[in-house]
Image (cartoon, rainbow, N blue to C red; front, side):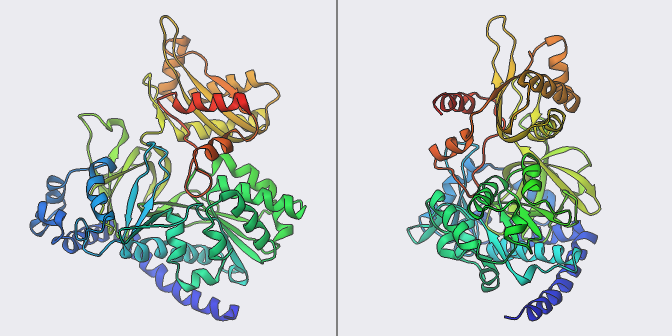
Length: 506
């Protein structure tokens, strides 16, 4: 298809969709309320719909009083029945696809239902919207003169009882509409290879011959791929390999720990970074402005949102509020009701609102990935802001990290223990350690209070990881590529102990 025709089609679709977005930006609560009633009405004859008498739910209050907030363990029995081929349990449309989560929060994997509606009206709609927003902000873009390099998951799809499960990216690639397949590289055969390391080389060999104008994938794994591209081609920058490269669409993990490394291999001032916020459960938010890491909450993807203030999360004071009651600057756990049959479901992420008109957010971490053994409530956002500042102050580069507690023992006070893999290590690790501790205190008043005069917490401890430690840990656990993530913070020492043991033997 000639590029001018593609640009004309894109321009027509862009204008139409931008107008639709303006509607939910202008009338967010009306759109969300209408969506909730649509979901309830559609599912009223399902097993769940009959159990909670969806037919008689008239208001949001009815909805909250009738349906409990649930986590995966509570809905798992119903999902397992659906995986065995039963239908009309929690959603009327037969569900064939189940996205297997990476299982970093718990050792056990989760199987998230993916309905035809969630594929079309959420995941694929979001991909189109991302292009719309990018092109709307960059009218001179030459995106369609080349292809998008995608890096999907490393898992094949497995069929059981007429249903299929696998990595979300594999499901999306397998069902991808023609326009997306046409504009993507490498081909599906390579994208769906199950051996991650063999796939890496195959992707490099295939794509270095292509005209790549955009890249899309998880920052940690994409960086591994791009470094392989540089090594294979012997080029000094990616723009020497792909001169028309103009944007990186990224999500899955925070970009902050990787940003400087990307800027070094893509030394182009006009290069754009566009962040997305998605998961197996749905596609939630996209960056809608150049040079801003705030994400526009998408309110018309078949997902109804509720929020739990984190200051009372898990306590008897826990309160669930609708979008209309959120406040700026507060941390919230996200609760969703979706067009794939998840009802008032805790996805395990935490976010903070940066704007209420329109609703824009930043992802701050995970409800289970924090350190709060001593009342310090250290979250991933604190950790990554601190590491970014300390890296600049000590002139070092960080590849990956994790942290956990050192528990009190006898008269010995507690502390935090970190394992950090550096690309460029600091000249003085003790100075880095002290600076990190001081920076965390400036970012987190609870941590500062526990550290004051070593009242509860001693100075944190930093272990320098050998090169490739986190890659080896991921490989040992079969977690290379895809949505797999390094667990950043934990209230337990499981990850720390295992990583220290691997580090000894590297």
